Image (cartoon, rainbow, N blue to C red; front, side, top):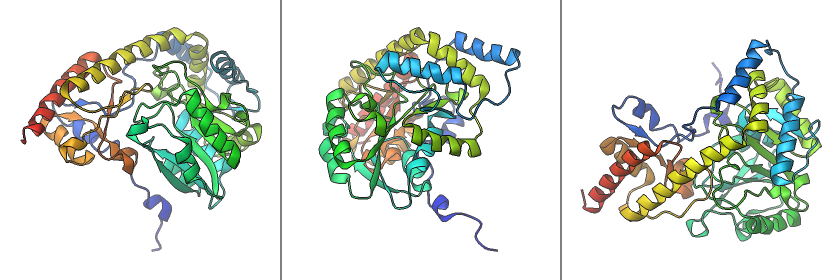
Length: 389
């Protein structure tokens, strides 16, 4: 029998995030700090709108691009919060989570042999999606001394005549790094000079703890060359509702919609009605969750300082990225021993790219009580390692 499998799929590495968590589920008294999922329930008024839509029998397909009212509310929100203006009919597409938008956006713009610039450490889907789209991924290794921000010099060095698009993953998963306006202005100069495009993944835009989030699409000359990706999972605690969106130039959104039409048809109808309510009346929910996350962030940073664990201060998302190089172990070895000996699961930094070696991703999308117990176990583990045990 001939080989039934596609080589490029077989050669993809499985996600490193899930490695430890099958073990955790079978381990008594284990604590997981690995999954990037809010511990908050979806706010009741959003759930109620979803329930009401079912009660009203709104269970049919929407248009391929999504409910017009939802697309309009997305445009209203982006204008209100970031001063961005999009046409809801031609420049907005509702997707099944931000992940589908990443996949479709790359497939819509890539020709075989095009290069996609991917700063790492970053979300695990970018590189596989680039490969599946027929692109050549070009990795830009971000540095702790730069707070894991992308610099203009690093971008300039990575660009070739085959470069088509830069993925801009900020606020960042796994590091919690952000890009401020001055950082983005320097990046934008390079992008304009070399006539490349940007996929700006802003799924954590509402979870910024230093000033106001800035999208690169806000800068002069950038909106027409940027695919802006966002969604409802993180800001509104709607992970299981599977809803995201892409905004961008009409010619790109048109082709993304074509792919979406054939592969998906439309995003879940119930989720779309709930999302309209989230955008209209969810600002207070975001503020409440952001305040709680910030409290947890500050708790972890203080705890790391007290135990002498090196960690730059992250100002976005809900992750910290402490350095464990002092212990002379790989990230995978450290995470494995920590899980085995203290029953706490964290994610090795290498799950997000080779340059994540020597770091761990710890999520603070968990209760303070949960975090306090985990930190107590981490301190005990670190002390044991420093004492040579």
